[in-house]
Image 1 (cartoon, rainbow, N blue to C red):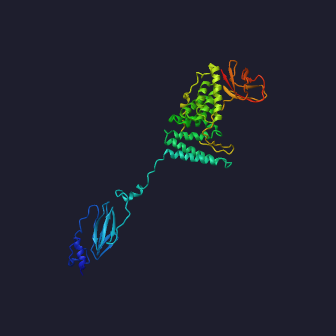
Image 2: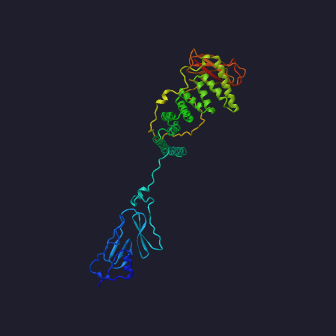
Image 3: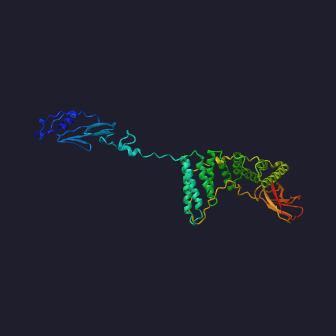
Length: 436
């Protein structure tokens, strides 16, 4: 018996452009039906079978035994494809959505409609932001601060050493990533400098890093003063003076720099230079007691320079930096620290105003120094390796012995004797210089 359609079904089919003649339909064979509509380019393909009834399910339209399947091929703008009985099929970016009259179509849509959905997960991965040098410096300093807090808490130095090595490695990463920025070298050099008391073998590495930092930035007074301090620890008066001269030029209002420089200049026998430094220093000192002491030193030098015209700066001395410091490139890969339970690990806290003293310069080998003649004692012998038969020795009282005539009583190889005509009941402090 031929298949019969209701008038509503026939009307819907006619709206779709399908001419239906019920008397020509048979139940045993497929109904030859013209295409519903020309396939939309790159969007839909319609496949047909004999219809039996009409229903909508998922993304297919069934009319009887005829099944209409919608097969999207590429991303397209949103527009309705088929509307039947209040239901609308929408195509959006290759997705098929079903919407009723009282419903709103919804779907998860890529933020960029030009990117295929299969690529969304890859494109959503954020790009890693390059680390700044501040990141490495802060990380290094945090490890270093933790190491200072950790030291001494246990007998095993391993945890502290691990923190120090992490601090060194972070500073080294700053150097690798930013080789033209002096701060990475300065950070690593400062770590080594803080360890020199217990790890003296690190002094050369610290000097090398600070020297590289100075080449990259010659305007950092912190770097030049650190170099002066390190060379003083090595007993190198020439480099100590050279870098202190650089420091006072960069920080012309900081009294400590001038005081340290004047002391070392005197020890090295650079009396006219020391006097010039004292003249600048006295303008900066505000404390009454300190200013009085500086005036005594200055006055003594003035008398000495007036008495000895040969006390001028030796021709082989210079305030310029020696060429040797520029031939010490830093190694990017610097040594880490080995843990040891046998020896204590000392991390020196940085002291900005720490006095700089040349370690190997003492009263026994420098060209100037201080001494005290004890009370009720007439004379004192001072040993010094710089004394020779042709040396001139000058002394001046700095405290006590008012109206007394303190003088050099005699001199010989490697020593000289200073005294009074007769002993007195108070100690006499004095300063001495050797002019060769």
